[in-house]
Structures are given as C-alpha cells and as structure tokens.
Length: 284
Image (spheres, rainbow, N blue to C red):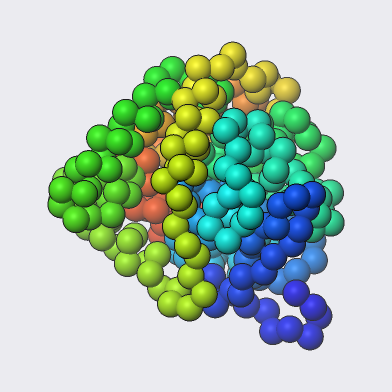
C-alpha cells in the first residue's frame, strides 16, 4: 500500500497481491492503515484467503495494518502443501520476512494456531503478541483425532448438501445452526477476485500434518513471553476445548476466553463479543 492509496478497511474489498519468497509466490491481502506493527492472520485447515470472517477482520483493520495470506500450495499461492506444521511455519517466516517485517502480531485460528506456535518457538523475536483461537499445543491429547472427526463431518455435510464448516465449527442445535448459516453467508460477502479451493491432495496433506503434530513431543511453551490471548467454544469437537485450557496453563500470563454453547467456531458465533476483545488486546 502506498501513501496515496485510499485506506481499505473492508476485507471484501481488499485486493489480492503476490510476493515471491524463495521458490514460492505467496498470495496475500492487506487492509487497514499501514505503518506500525502489522497483524498477520494464520488460517485454518483447508482454508484460503476467502475463509476469514469479515466481522473479525474489519474491526481489527479499522486501526491496524492487517495481512492475510494463502499457505504454500493453497489458493493462489504456488508450490506444494508442506507435510509438517514446522515446514508450514518456516514458509510463513519466509513470507513475513519477504514483506520486510521484523516484528508482527499474530491472529490465528485452528491449524493456523499450530503454525503460529511453531513459528514463535523458532523465531521468538519476530512475534510481539499472539492470539490463539480454536487451537491446541503440539502433542495435545486427542489432537490426532481431528482426521476422523473431519472425514465424518465431510460425509455428513455431503449427505445434506451443506458446507462442512457448518458441522465442524458449530453445534448442531438451533443456536449453532443459525450461527453456522450466518457465518457461511458472511464468507460470501466478497464477490470479486475470489480464491480457488484447496486441492484434495493438499487437504489430505494438511490433515496428515496436523495428525503428526498431535502425535509429536510437546514444544516448550514455557519459553513464550509474548502476551497471549486464547479463545474457543466450550464444545470444540475438532481441537478439544480442554487443549485451549492446556495452552493457557502452559503459556505464562496468557488470557483465556471460553464461549458457552459453541464449538470450534466459537469466536465466529460470538463475533460481536470477541472482536472488541481482540481489538483491545492487540491495541494494548
């Protein structure tokens, strides 16, 4: 963004850009006022640039430089999807340094939170603040079961011609179904220059990477000194909610919010409550 460009604060209108780092050309979008420390968003399993809830991004972009990006081999980014979370973190580091940043804040969700943790462990000096939502630690109990849960819900979604996120992210009660429908509609607000879906091969590779992460030896999260905000719903079937509590115990001084009667996508169901909390935390 150059100085004379108008500041874009709506994610639906943020243009897609590219930058090459090593062998990979990364697709990314940026919005909000430039200058200062950017907030880089780390996206979930199978997700592209179009999977971020504008009700979370737009309030943060009001006063902060926000950057979203496609992981290697996903959407409009070139290359092959990495088969480990560490490799995805190394790719993210290449992308961030190619943009010229030496300090960032991170907002992450689900698999993005796993990548973010590996990035912070490898490059603690890069990250000032950390938001970890719907995620868990390396080696977390039952994290490797995400594969079975995901395939089960893909089948359920196919049978009802629904978006799998309606099953994976939200409870299947009346409140959860309403929240799911509203969330899916918000993801359609961008009508131009939309991203292509992840390939089936790429999706399977990411799932295996999460499974390996779940079965690995834990990282030393006691070394994290960054202010950290952790959030989830109380009934996360994908990355069990107890793992958010475990992150909170292991990251000194972290803050934890668990939303009632909600699942993996609790922050999207409760976006009206959560977005102001995230804005305040990141702006502190």
